[in-house]
Amino acid sequence: MNEANIYIGLMSGTSIDCVDAIAVTFSDGKIHILGSHSEAISTQLKLDILRLCLPGTDSIALCAETDNVLGELFSQASLTLMAQLNISPDQVVAIGSHGQTIRHQPPNKVKGFSVQIGNPSLIAARTKCAVVADFRRADMALGGQGAPLVPAFHQRFFHEQNSCRVIINIGGIANLTILDGGDQCNGFDTGPGNMLLDAWCFKHKAKNYDDKGAWGATGDVSKPLLNQLKKHPFFSMQAPKSTGREDFNLRWLEQQIENFDLKPEDIQATLIALTAETITAAIAALNQSIDDIFICGGGVFNIELINRLNRSLYACNQPAVKSTLDIGLDPKWVEACAFAWLAKRRVENKTGNLPAVTGASDTAVLGGLY
Image (cartoon, rainbow, N blue to C red; front, side):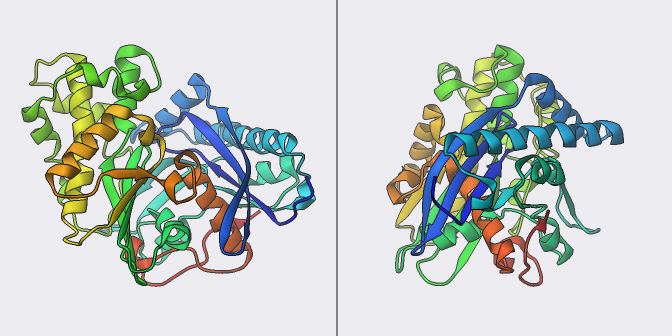
């Protein structure tokens, strides 16, 4: 490939299913996708990551070892993509690697922290490319949540003058970006996206996810359980706010269902309703006239979730969701593209956070250069 000024974005989300790699260029105010590749995360590696995500089971050795294993996996995803596209290292300006989040503690009474692993020095050594990683800590040093970071990317590429758009990203966690049609952009996490759905499906079906939501569609929503799940204090918090596996995990879910006698598929159906209805409630609470709602992330492929989300939105007089493909970007690749763009911002020494979203006291250049 003869293209120069290529950026590669690497993303491994809270669902811990694969590493997504995307190669892009930026020109004429647009993003151009050259190609993409996904590298599966092995069951053992996923289990090691999950051990590191749980408070009270910390191991410095396990963290360091998993950091290196993930670094190798991110490297392999990049090298495979580069080989497929015939890209040489000297054509790549930088690889933007989000890393794998193993702990996220938003600021409260003490300074917050967020830990991502996936050794960026190792990625740089293997690929012979510059790597930008550790995107969150500069924002958190300024009192910010360090998340979500994708709204700045959404604003840059999905903004439409005089049109109020909401972008929903449903990964392991779900988050919103609100683009008001002017200069304002806001956003925040709404709560669990696929995270609880995937965990419950793995426990009962030994599958990493509920394909198209087919299993959840066979169950009935338990209103009493749904109401109890919605009592989690995160849902009533005011933005800026972010969350993760520390708040919403299988252990928490099992505590919530102790006094309920429900079939596993009914609990899965209820979890689908939880994701759909908490997203809808967050949109309805904006008290804005929304012109369009676009969706991205792995949740877009859960048909039952999208159908329930649309029913919930309709009941609140909100527009039905559309795919970000309708505005130029495949929903599967939005986050990886975002970190390619954030790498570009770092290389150019430009700010990447939005204080209105994260709550930081100022803008910041995000990421370390390896």
